Amino acid sequence: MWVCFGVFLLWMNSGGYTLDQIEYTPAEFYKTLHLGKMMFVYFEQNVSPTISLFLVELEKSAEALRDYGFLVGKVSCEKELVQEYCTEERYQHTAFLFRGGKEFLSFDLDTVFDVNSIVSEVLFAILREEVKYVHTDADLLSMERAARGKRDIVLGYVRSLGTREHRSLMETAYVYGSK
Image (cartoon, rainbow, N blue to C red; front, side, top):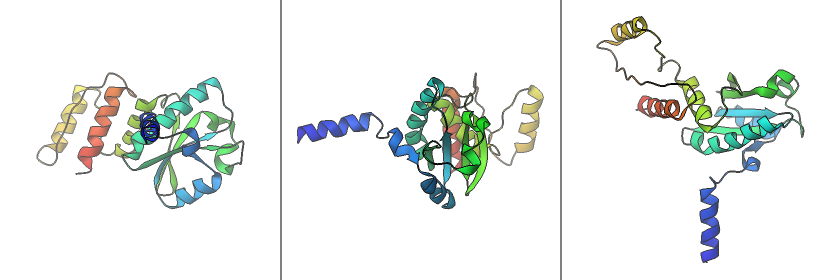
């Protein structure tokens, strides 16, 4: 009994996901896509060392994004082609966000390079109408005038996009916005 419990704890500690568990066949991808769920998907063509690192981070992000109702996965183009996404070389370094059964946004792998950047960028994509970036004092004043007496403004400072801080801010905005 203790051995089973120990194995269970090790499985839980590993995050519970493996690349096999986030891998979709093209049929599973289309079936899930037509259900209208939000999906973050990478269509794997050739595995380089850089892509291998990304796949590890993609696996880690599956559990984090599941908490927000997103499915995360990869489709192996070497096993079976998904015509729209497996035939063009430019998609080798691109991951896609699907919403409502349609492609919503694409991300260059340079912007979604680890679990923090994946989670923050995916959540920001969904929240782009609610979360605005302010770059100048004039932008801030304009935003304050437009919101005065109508809605709340929460300000946060993020040194760089795709960081742990950016992820925390996006997670907070997502939870706050759902209330």
